[in-house]
Length: 113
Image 1 (cartoon, helix red, strand yellow):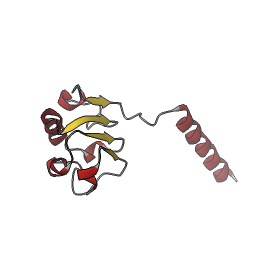
Image 2 (cartoon, helix red, strand yellow; image 1 turned 90 degrees about the vertical axis):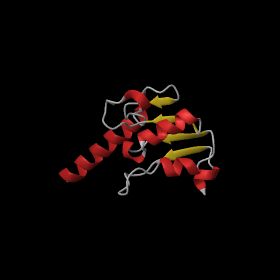
Image 3 (spheres, rainbow, N blue to C red; image 1 turned 135 degrees about the vertical axis):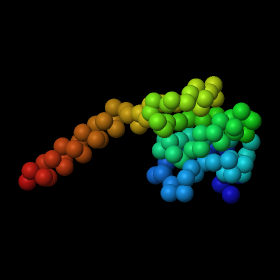
């Protein structure tokens, strides 16, 4: 099981219809001291379960690029000392901006032809 053997779990997927992908049950299956990186959607994490995992030491740290809502209204997870949070701009780099602008210009030129 990937949860039981991974030191770092990194999420890069769309929201799940069945609720959070990382919930109390999945955290229980993880090895102690795991790190979780969520650069996808906030709904992939059950905030209460993740907070409990941080407090118990099961989860060593969390990196989150999205909160629900943004900005957070409940700061227990976002303000936790073992959490690094970014305001959903983790992929906002000069390179990603250049690619997005190039794609937009290419699409505009195709539409005008």
